[in-house]
Length: 284
Image (cartoon, rainbow, N blue to C red; front, top):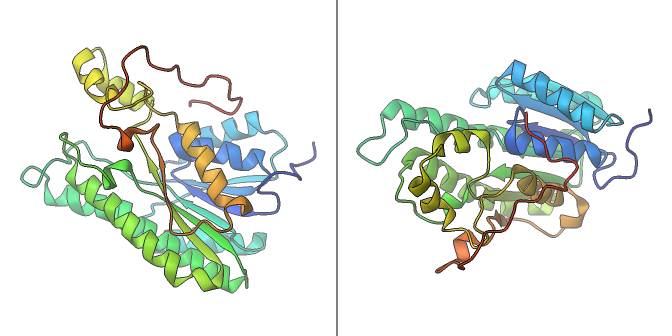
């Protein structure tokens, strides 16, 4: 079957980290649908292969879908991952999405130093390495434009009474790092933008909330829509930032939260139902 040729990312080569599930997987599906050649990266080989199979099932005419196991906290692995796209004609887009929020992450008193260091190594250093080697790759290929998208979080913008201090601090660092790189590299044509997702409807979150109704309502009440977001809704924002439609979007904090960070009092009444008609919404 012929590959996708007329999509919004046709002819572009893209790397997506944290592609084994969630936002990374949904972004991989959309990128493939829109004609990009994609390299899916994750620390888990089995998760990657399962995710790749899902992409090819949903987008059987994808241009190119390959995988690589990568620990983004190791610069040598990030460098090798990015440089592997030189043989494709060079990198055009990288989505630095891989990150962790550790169960032992707590407040200033309760967060262990090793959890702080681990979180910073993956969530901040991993993004820095991705940005660094993306710039080098774009220069190597003499590209006059490129899109670098980094996953931050709404907790980099608002506080939370359920502490996750290392995670929150790391996502604030991603915003600052992205903002500065957007200015430094603007004259080269390289755009740097951040994605700030709200809490998402994932199996991990649902398992954690379980049947604890007060615990669930304490979080859902902050959403004007009355519901959590879906990973595919974040992926749609990433697709826009990666595309030439966002050619004048640089240094932007793309908040995709259903209005959560803008709400003082949320509406009464029944919540909206999450979208179910997107053909590319999937779960592993």
